[in-house]
Length: 446
Image 1 (cartoon, one colour):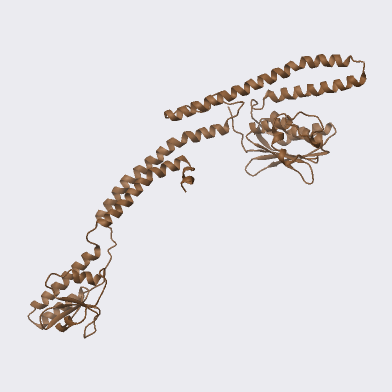
Image 2 (cartoon, one colour):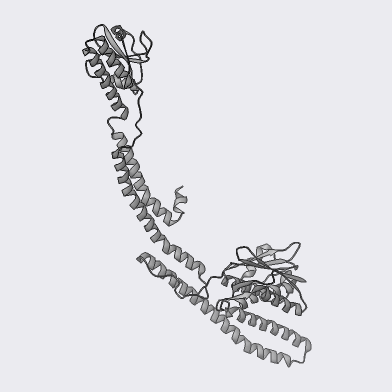
């Protein structure tokens, strides 16, 4: 339970930790107040009824005529106090045993000293039962059937004032805790959002705002410094690989010239094939390192037209490439980069399959998916994540033709720059499905 609580949001933890003591304090206050009550409501009612019984008894004693006694008894009955005159011998019978918390016991217990009273199950008349028998003189007594205890549900002024005092203390604490938790959690939420939106190759140099309390500023500065170091390492790696690729062009050109002057045809053919492979690798590396996908301006491009252009280019070269999807759909994207990604997927399919199908699907929320399906040998599922890495090549039937493991990694970079996802799935009965999923609106990284 505690582990789940501390794994929750900071906003909720601070709010709970701030409010819980106030709630506990209020509960303890209510409990202590109830425990401190010396006189329950039933006791005060019992005392009042006992006083009424004593008053009626005294009035009967002082009555001079039977008519006066009858008038007094009728008046008592109208107030809800059932009473009848009985013989004093009723005081000699067995007393009815009840619990100490019984309302009738409380009434009997609140009579003044000297009052001769006994709780009986009934009397000789049997009209009232059970009754409190109170002696008047040596011959006569009165049997009373007291009204039941009534619970007063009305809220007293004191209870209202206590409630208002508790709310006056509780509400500000809750509001302050919510405000404080939001003030602490909101910078972390901003950092999280900035990290999700951050492009490793583009965007602001210091994307995390160094504002707020010292701890938040220190965290933001550390994140910005880390961003700068990572960006610097990427830039250094890119410059190094770009320089190496450029420098390889000169010796490759000299090798080509020397190979072309060779008089041995088999040797010349083998040398030129190797030189072509090395040249292609250098060119692909330079294209990959150019990283121009995030620098292209976003435009509303007609995706069906863009994809059809790619499919027609490959069809003109003799490949069986077909498009299926809407005729028109404007979508905000980096059109040249997205066209390059689709072309790489189609090119990858034509190397290993007879047929390639490109499907554009527009979803109700405005997001899109572009799937490129071929009928080639496919890729084992355990290698789906690996083939998206630069320069990774499979030792399988899908790697018996050209390429240096950069095609899919270029596609992934383009998709990442559009804040989308690239997934690979084997088709049935064979083949590969490469699917690009893009959100309804591309966020800006600049």
